[in-house]
Length: 191
View 1 (cartoon, rainbow, N blue to C red):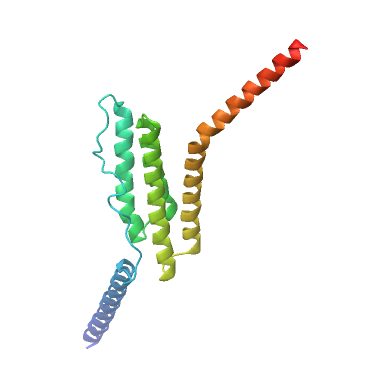
View 2 (cartoon, one colour; view 1 turned 135 degrees about the vertical axis):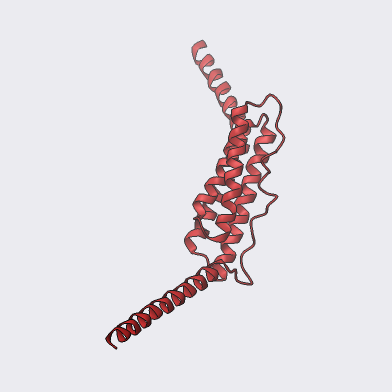
C-alpha cells in the first residue's frame, strides 16, 4: 500500500509539473505572438523601392571592391529593414545601414548629379523612417526618442546636401574676394 501511495504522489507531482510546463509554454507563445502582431493602424512599412536592389547597374570600369562594398551595404540594409519593421533592432542600427549604402554608392558616383541623386534618395528614406516613427508614436508603439533620432538624422542629411549645393556659389564668392584682395595688394605695392 505504501508503494502505491508513493507512486500516486509521484504521478500527481509529475502531472502537476507537466501542466505547469504546458501552461507556461502557452503563455510564452501568446506573448511572442502578441509582439509580432501589428495594430490595425500600424505604421507604414519602408518603401521597398526606395532602397535600390543589389544588382544596380554600374559602369564597367567600377572598382570591384567598391561594387562589393555597395552589394554588402545593400544586403545589410535589406536584411535590417525587416528586423527594424518587426521592432527587433533599434532605429539607429537601421539608419546606419541606410547611411552605409549612401556612402558606398557615393564612392562609385562620378558626377555631381549622381552624388546629389544618391543623397536625395537617402533623405527620402529618412523621411519615410520619420513618418513611420511618427505613426508608431501616435498608435502608442513608438517612442519620442526614436522619432527625435529620425528627425535629427534627416535634418543633418538635408543640411549637408544644402551645404554641398551652396558650395559653388561660396567658391565663386571666395574667388572674387581673393581677386579683390590681390588687387588691393597690387595697389598698395604701387603706392
